[in-house]
Length: 317
Image (tube, rainbow, N blue to C red; front, side, top):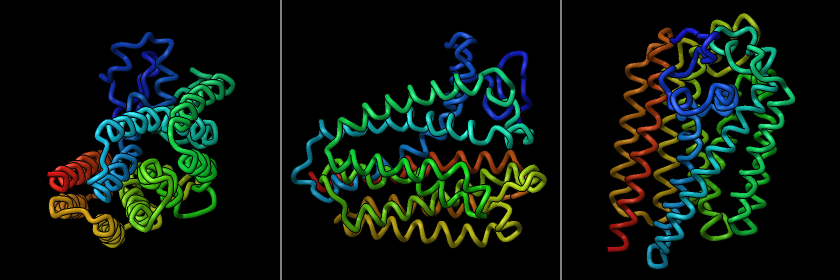
């Protein structure tokens, strides 16, 4: 794990060679850190359920696919994921200020280090949220209402670690909302397929965020922060085996209900093997490995997306 370089304005848990530090003026660095632009893995993992849902909907109706509309929706979800993840992280840092001060990995972040004040952080959060609202308003009315409904879960998540051993479940509810949104944007309604994709995405999120939480379990134990990493403990591999297996089953069922062709299931099989490898090699007492395995879920996202795209192309051929 990297150590903080407070004089340079960098933080402990972000790569120091990121584009943020090469291209942005130093006075913007704290805001980029609040939004986690120096750690793109967060918005990437938030984006995957959105992209999967867009293509799942397209697989369900390949004869009426509008390629330009799909690209447009993918682009909108990309912008939305970046700004809403940034707004959510800023909100989370405001709520967790007292906790971040006590955790070695987080005390160098902009708020606990004093490089940004609470009022500045709130203003930055509002700006990001307004951009997210502008993106949301490009969709149909059902999608707009559905997107606004997600804010209830987002608001609860930062407090979950204080009242439950399952804060990763609440993160999953928020981070997987896009699994509903892509389908809703295409059809103006929901169905069983996107609901199953949502459940699968929630389970996937619980799994990968448990890996992430193992980095902080010692500090969390000292200050009373709860997590599935602490709950599962030495039985983490057993828990993850069940959670990832259920995630794979739900996603396969979603693809089946959407009428997806064989390439989708082949790709989902590859993704399941990748998840299984995470469990096989996991050392819960190696923080660097836990972070690397957490980040490897971006590759899982690519595999699922590529399989849905290939399936759509096969259906349209």
